[in-house]
Image 1 (cartoon, protein in one colour):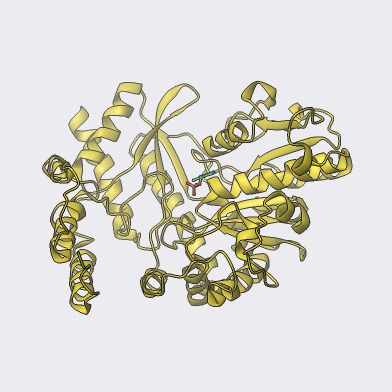
Image 2: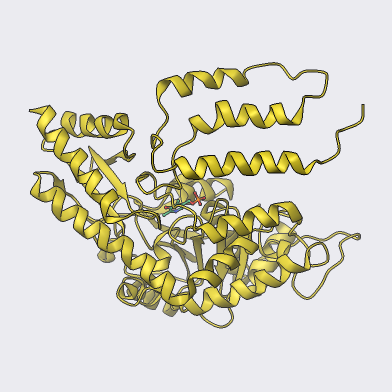
Length: 454
Ligand SMILES: *Cc1c(COP(=O)(O)O)cnc(C)c1O
């Protein structure tokens, strides 16, 4: 069998399909209807022996795939702190997809290697991080948290005279992990992957906004790893990074900040106070694909101790051709997508002012939404310090019914959560596409629900 040669017509077909999708984004349901979901059965088939017509392959995706997408690139997807995608970032990714660069080594993709260096410098600049900070470009904050905690573990054990790479965890001196109840699921997963076990964590209480209770912080020493959060996934709240870092630095502890979406507050003049003291931490994790609105997958690990990150994530092989800076040494992956390309395009396009304006825009939408919902009789459960609005109704059943009502409308999508033991509604504003009119549509939906539920 001879594979069909690449044909430009195939790409032309993909382009036409993609443009149809773009043209329709504001009119399509934000979550697919049941009919579209049922049609996903189309894909339930055994893999056939003979080669398929590539146009038919694309046609399946167009007919059965695209109607079962969520309208994340539109303005009314308010679920999960999922960002949209700034057009130039999507276009740059599209273009570089054709290059199909393996980003692991400089010699395999000089352009990706170069743009990682540029993005590293720019990220330090906009987030106000120390000069020694290096960046690894990974799939998302889950991988960024994992990479940072690998570096932290290596670093702390080394200071305790233990060579982790040689001796592993067997018989290693214990690391004390200090985390509060509201750390993100991905942080808990990372702790499990790294073999720390949930029982060995010193779990600390959090306050009504999901911030670490400062009084609860125990006396630290140089075996401590402190896990902080810039942007709670429900409330958007920020831990007191400045105060904790001062205590931790005096004790020789390592502070990691999970700022998947919230770290971008540091790039916004009016919100920068939320991340005060950020530069005093040791490592940070942030996403491009949330607040910055790059396409998926784009996460970044930042670490003030380059040697610890690189040694913890070492990769040796006789055949590897090393250069001055090889991307694969800054993250867990070897072969990887050259994701710095669209990250660079996004930052280059927006500039520091554009990033500032976009982040501030999310905050302003969130404030207006919260005050309107309060007027409608919903309870706003959080201090709206960033882009998250957490609300509920006066009874839990109504809260759940409101979520279902809005999800079923197809005009917007948001998710439910549990807050302090009760159902709550979580609204994330983090798409560059969201306009005042989109916020008005959401407010109207909440107003309509008040009418139908009485
Ligand atoms: C989304 C999120 C993560 C996980 O990031 P991914 O990019 O989904 O891997 C971690 N922490 C917080 C606070 C988040 O919001």
